[in-house]
Every structure is written in structure tokens, then in C-alpha cells.
Image (cartoon, rainbow over all chains, first blue to last red; front, side, top):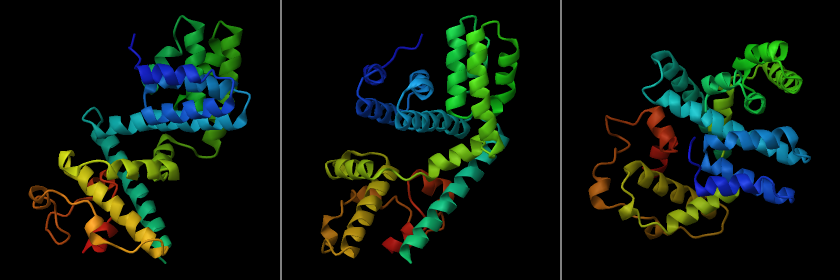
Length: 107
Length: 174
């Protein structure tokens, strides 16, 4: 079983806090950590938390962690040439969008 | 934890592990797992697990209907700007960092770029008079190795993206 870091353990524990603001802070912290071991805890919050904002935030954090890991995997030699080509296309589109936004702001 | 891991967990003998995997797949709207989730809904021996599979399947199906894909998910994550409070914290941390001890040249390059952009934004808002000497200086040995805007070996799009820069960066600093 994977050893959880102290920061991760603390963040997961705070997901059970009675205060929704504290749960939101815990979710933000887990997102910044980016550890995939946080996904089960975030998924439980997504499925069961009584606050819609907390559920939405948990989903956003979960997607960031999950698809961030997928992106990293595509960037390593584990990925096939086709996957790397797809990743390059996605990154190029994202960069084009950033550049477009930058141009709009300059006008 | 990737799709393969989650697919394996859908067949775990522990129903709690299967529920956990279904919740994760639903949360990240993993449309590639729709068939597997449907199979769990149709075949799982536990009623509770089938119920979660039905809930997860609905969410993932809805995502699929609106055209959501892992590629779109990654595009959204890359294009998402850093929240304002995170930007401020990051820039403050750079001000406290002695760049001589930051070894990675792209990190230093990014730090200079971000500081420059922040100063420029302040000047344009009329909040600050530009003082070029306040920009963090790179060690002279490093500047010699950085590509110049007119160099033949201009960084590619992926290099720039990794450094958090855009092609306009070279125009702005020239």
C-alpha cells in the first residue's frame, strides 16, 4: 500500500470537517498537492457532500489531478508515438488559446 | 491512478473498492469507461454497487452527449489561468527567492518574465513607475546560455508552454 505523505493525510482528514469552508480549503490544498491518492477522498466528497459548491470544487480538483497525471504520462517515454502526437496537438491548441487571449487583452 | 487502474478496481472483490472506482470515474467524467460502467450495472452481484454504477453511468453518459473527451479535459486544464490569489503568492515567493540558487534556466526565465509582466501591468494601471533595476537579474553565466529572440534555435511551442511563456515574450523583451 502506498505511504501517504503527512500533507496528504492532513488534507484528507480535513475533508471530513463540519465547516464547508474548511472542506473547500482542504480540496484546494489537495489539488495543489496533485497526488492521485487524493482521488478516492475527493470522489466521496463529489458523491456525498451536502454543499453543491463543495461537490463542484471537488470535481474540478479531481479532474485536475487525474488529467494532469494523464498529461504527464503522455509526456514521458511510456506513451506511444500516437499518444505523444495527440498530446502535442492538445498543447499547441491550448497555447494558441493563451496567445489569442493575450492578443485580445492587448487591444 | 489511471484508467487501467480504475478498470481493474471495477472487478475488485471488495464492493467498497468497486464503488470507489465508480465514483472516481463519474467525478472525472471518464467517457472511455462508459462501457465498463454499464457492464458493472448489468452484472455486479451487489445492489448497492449497481445503484452507484447507474448514477455514474448517467453522469458519464451526459458528459459523452455534450462531447466531453479526455482531450477536452486536458485542454481545459492547460488553458485555465492560475487563480489570482495563487498568482500573487507565486510572485511573492519569487521576490523572496534568490535566483542565483534556482538552477533550472527555464524557471529563472519564467520568473523574470512573470515579474516583468506584473510590473508592466502595474505601470499600465498607473500604480507604479517602472524601474528597470528592480527586475531580478540572472547570473551572467546563465544569460549567456539563454536563447536570444533572434537566435536560430528559437524554442518550440512546447518549450515555451513548459516555461509558461508565449511567443510574444520575445517581442516584449526585445
